[in-house]
Every structure is written in structure tokens, then in C-alpha cells.
Picture 1 (tube, rainbow, N blue to C red):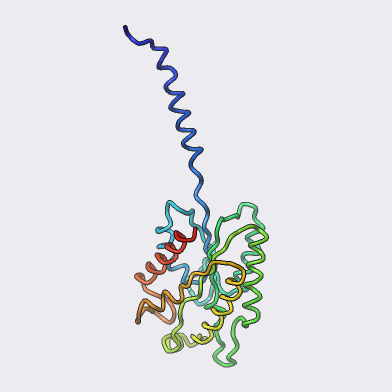
Picture 2 (picture 1 turned 30 degrees about the vertical axis):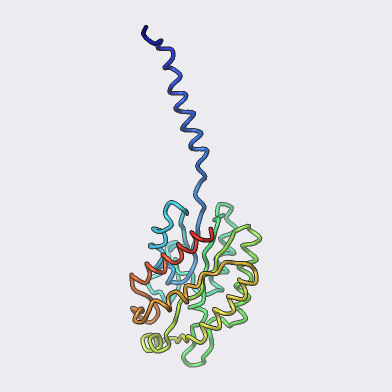
Length: 231
């Protein structure tokens, strides 16, 4: 006996139900937002690749501003801690801006030292205050954060190749230590990109403070591995 055709009219409905249930089971990927100095801009494309399928990657973008000169932060370059704080204060006012996790770094621009006066671009006290305000702001908005320690500076390499301002490793050590206290005391995860990069060996710089492609890829892999482990 031939099967009744009526039995088959229900099959599309069954398949549609299965597809809908499968789609409902799939949770949307969490959002990851990055704001940092030019170092983050350079490892960013690698990080975006490494977190694909696990996070929806986004970062501070050019927004029409040029970031061609990485020593003068604009656009995608987060700049110093005051600039990052100002950006976040404005950004969180947008109801659609609710990433699940933020990776934040600032420090290289803060320790810029005036060649004549020796004055830092951002004082240590102001740096600490800015970081504390960032934490409080994101806490109030329910946005989790991870802090990334600022990458190394070599005095001779930097100050012989960049003479409009100086940077010193000793200052960076102090600023990183302050950031450690601010965030570790508040239970914020800290990625030691400074220590990781320092242990990669010598001759990593391609100019006064930036790194080559291989180092950028390794930095991104280190960060992605941290995210895999903790989140």
C-alpha cells in the first residue's frame, strides 16, 4: 500500500521546529571591547583573529580622526589615562554600548617626560585617580574589565630615537605598580603583557617603543590564552 501523502505535509513543520529550537539553544557570543595605546592597535588584528567564534571583538576606532602619528594619540589610539577616562565617560552614556568585557590599558602616554622640565604628561597621583574612576564607572554600568599592564620601554632605544619627549623604564615600573595595586585590590584580573613581552628576548623594537609583527602576534596569543583560561 502506498503511504498517504498527508503524512508528509507535517515534515516541513517538524524541521522548522527543530531549527528554531536549535537557534534558541545557541547563546549569542559575548562582546569584547578594547581600548589602549598604539600597542593595542598593533596586536589588535591578531587578537580579533584569535578570539573569533568566542567573542565579538570591537575597539576604540578612528571615528574620522587620524592615528597616523602614534605618538600623538587620536582616533583608535586611546592615549593617556585622562583621555581614556574621558572617552569611557562619554561612551557609557550610549545605551547600546554594553560590552560583556573590556580590556583596558594606558600608561605609555602618561609617562611621557618633557625634555626640558622633566614633568610627566600625567602625574602619578592623577594616574591613580583616573584608574580608580574608570573602575567605578564600569562597575556602575555593570561592565566587567581586565587591565593590561603597559609594555616595556628601553631608555637608550627610546630616547635616542624619539627626542621630542622621553620615556623611562623606571617610571613605567612605578606606574605599572600603582595600576597593580588599584586593580588587584578590587579583584580586577590583570594581564602582565609587560612581563610577557620582556621575556620574549632582545631586539624586539622596530622604533622607539613599538614591536614587530611576530611580537604583536605573540602578545595577542598571550591575551587570547588569558581570556580562554579566565572566561
